[in-house]
Each structure stands twice: as structure tokens, then as C-alpha cells.
Amino acid sequence: MSSKEKPTLGGTRIKTRKRNITIPLDPASFSDAVVQIYLDNAGDLELIARNIESSELDFSRYGDTFFEVIFTGGRTQPGTTKPDEGERHPYSIIDCEPKREAILPSVIYIQKILRRRPFLIKYLENVMRRFLQSLEFFEENERKKLAIFTALAFSQKLSGLPPETVFQPLLKDNLVAKGLVLSFITDFFKEYLMDNSLDDLISILKRGKVEDNLLEFFPSAKRSAEGFSEHFTKEGLVPLVEYNAKKMFDVKLSEMKSALTTQIAEESDIAEVIETVKHRMRDANLPDIEVVRILWDVIMDAVQWSGKNQQQNANSALRQVKTWAQLLNTFCSTGKLELELIYKVQMQCYEDAKLMKLFPEIVRSLYDQDVLAEDTILHWFRKGTNPKGRQSFVKALEPFVNWLEEAEEEE
Image 1 (cartoon, rainbow, N blue to C red):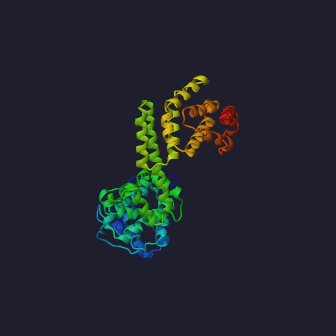
Image 2 (image 1 turned 30 degrees about the vertical axis):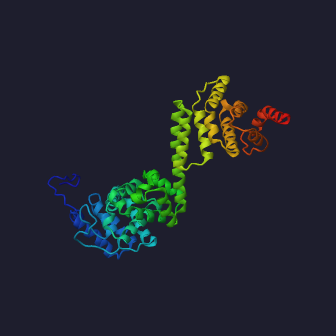
Image 3 (image 1 turned 120 degrees about the vertical axis):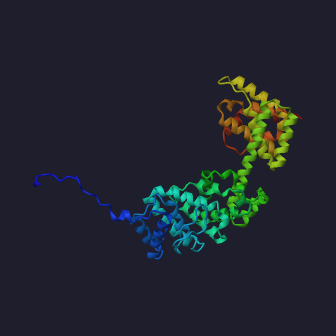
């Protein structure tokens, strides 16, 4: 061949690189290789991460096995948490102390691995889902370690770990019935709230689709608002108790409003509507002041408003007030509740342009229907505390107030 001729590949044998030949081709060999890296570096996660990064191990094939080694120190039997045959190391998450300072380095280590190999997140999900569905096969302190790891993983925003991966597997009936889920979720809440706000926790619960059904973590015998409050108060999670109480309260208000909206839209008998309100108040322990606010909302929501016809809107609103005056009168049973109704009317008229000029007419109508007493109206006029639109409303109501005062003087 002359020096100018180009070499060809004809007849040339391409050698297979040695490193490709030595890659483990089965889970057991893969597990042993990863365990050996742990042992060679005496559990130093920084060194282990570097060795993992430079290795030619087939993580895309044996990702589940890799995380089994991280969590338990070796490979587990297929579909279980039981150790399988093969090498093991003593530096796993399950083998460390059930303390955040002992578990946090493993979270940071996994974060480093996932940044370099983001495809591994699905394998982490698989293993965590399997372990959480098998909590009964772990010892109590091992379950606590898993809970602490999970909380720290979310605190550190572990790459791409979706909350539903954690929370949904916990809702297995047998795990809930044994109280294992409640114990796990309590440890999780306590650990997570050490570094994060309650709003952060609620955000995770929402993404995990469990925010509205936290009671499902409780065994059926303890599944009540009282049981929730007692348990988490004892565990020092009072802000969570207060949040859940408000959440349940809002749900009950919403349910009551929905029921009343239907009845008023269907023009049900007033006596029937009154009974519905009383029943809801008893069952949900709703305060009178919230009931008055809801009643006014649903009554006004049922008005058929006209686009720009102010007189027609006025007639419709006043007709609605007259129709449901008995309902309002039943529950505006004290001067304080009557005053709250005026404030509610004031706010709606302030926020809704089509009602802005109707304030004095609505108040007059409520007076005529014996819903509002003279003393209540005069108190609002002289000492009302809500500033929203107050100046203009006071001016608009002044002729009616003058009439009331003159009538009082004549008497």
C-alpha cells in the first residue's frame, strides 16, 4: 500500500472493549458489585458517589436493585422486602440510626446520583412504593427511618419524586387497620415540619391527592374529627389540628350552602328550608353568624338579575328579600346577628356595582319585614365599624334614619 492510499476496514476485526465484557449481566452480580463499592469505601457516601459515577454498571437495567442496596444494604427477594442471597453492606438507610442527621447524607447522596442519572427516579419510585406497601414487614424503628427519609426527601426536593408515590400506597386497608400508616404519617409530619411550614406540607398533601381525606390514615375506630384532634395534639402538631378543623368547617359550610341553594332555587316551602338549616347547624355545630352570612348569599344568588335595568334589579332583589324574610327573621334572633346581616348587605352592595344604590332600599325592606330592628339600624348608622363604602351608604340611609328618629320622638 502506497503512503497516499487510505487504509480500509476490510477484513479488520473490531475488538470488544474489556469494560463491556465485565459488566454484570444479572441482578445478583449487579448488587454484589454495588455492595463492593460501599465496602471498598467504608460507607463514605462522597467516595461511593464518585465510584458509582465512574462505573460502567447497567443502572438502566437494574435500577430497582440499585435502590434496594441503598435502602436495605443488599438485594431483596422479588416483590418483597426480605433479603435475598448475595453480598450485603452495613451502611444502608435501614441500618443507620433513626435520626435525621444519620439519614440526611443518604438523601443528599441519592440527589447527586439522580442529577447525573435522572432516569433512575422511576426506579426510586418503584422501590419506595413497594416498601411503603409492605410496612408491616419492617420493624417499628425501620418504619420510622423510612418516614424520616421520606420527609427529608421532600424537604430537600429530591429530584422529581411525586407525592402520590408516597401517599397513595399507604392507603391499603390492612396497613391502615393495624395503625401502621398513622404511625408512619405522624413521623413524616413531625420530621417534615421541622424544616418547612404547614403551607408547604399542605401543598405536598394536595399534590399527593390526600389533603381532603387525612382521616383515611386513621384506623376506622379512631376515624373522627375528635380522634384526629386528640392524636395530633398529643404529638405536638397543633397547627395541623387547627388546619384540619378549619378545613372540615369549610366543607360543612359549603355543603350547607349547596343544599340551601337547591331548595331556594326550587322555591321550597319556607318551613322545610328552616328545618334544613336547623338540622345542618346541629350536625355540623355551625355558629349562628356563619349561618346568617350563608342565608344572605344564597338568597341573593337566586335573584334573576337584569343586565343594565337598575329598576328591574331593585324590584327583583326586594322581591327576594320579601319572599324569604321569614327565613332571615328566624335566624337573625339577636341584635348582634341583625348587625351582621347589615354588614353582609353593606359588603355585597359595595362589591357589586348593580347593588350599590340599593343599600337603603334593602335595609328599609328588611325593617318592614321585621328582620331588622330599629335599634340595630341606628347602631349601624352611628357606630358601624366596616369602612367599605360606609360614607356613601350612611349618606344614602340618612333620610330613612331621620324618619326613624322622628317616629321615635313622636312616640
